[in-house]
Image (tube, rainbow, N blue to C red; front, top):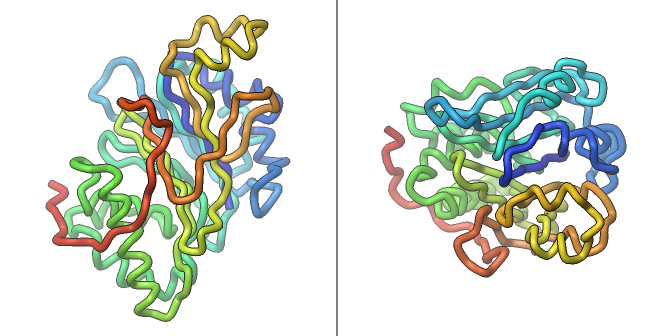
Length: 286
């Protein structure tokens, strides 16, 4: 499986989150505590949105392990962003190649995934046939994660993110039932349009991979007034992570099973329930 993080809030250097915490994502690439594997060395990637340009995120991916990549360390110490993704990969069977590294990008969208579609080769053809033909040429790799992304784009990611992800999950589960694959879907997913982050935790068996979100900034400041750097962060600053980046009390909260979070949120609730839905007519992706 994999480990990932999503950050949204006050602009900061990527290495503030990727390298400096006690149990940073780079540390997790070697010493994951909650993953199926403790080592996630089958490639990595970061994606970030800049303050200018056309809203399309930049992406840097490589097939080597994150823990000894000097280019990643150099980039992270110079790039500042208010919204970025980072992912360290442990392959579930697909090739270790750059096009299989997360995050995936299409237009203004970023997507990353931890988990798997069970018996993916049995379902792959039918899943790929459901992707909008206009989008099919953009799929470069061989992972289930990328197919899930383009299915979500096909099912209306531009119009309704939770609905599109729910229809994608519903299609995976319906095809799993048709092909005799019980409990086909395991996923924690992050997706962003550059303005907000949506984070989903769901599995067909109801035992999803770990996912945590940070408490609201004002809460963390109240609990830990000794942390001076928190004073510079906006109240909307939040992280979603596969594993907590440290052990400070009151900072990390587990995202419940079958739910999703939106950052920044327009409501007082930190998360809302999530469930797959049957895919209806496929909207045009153009």
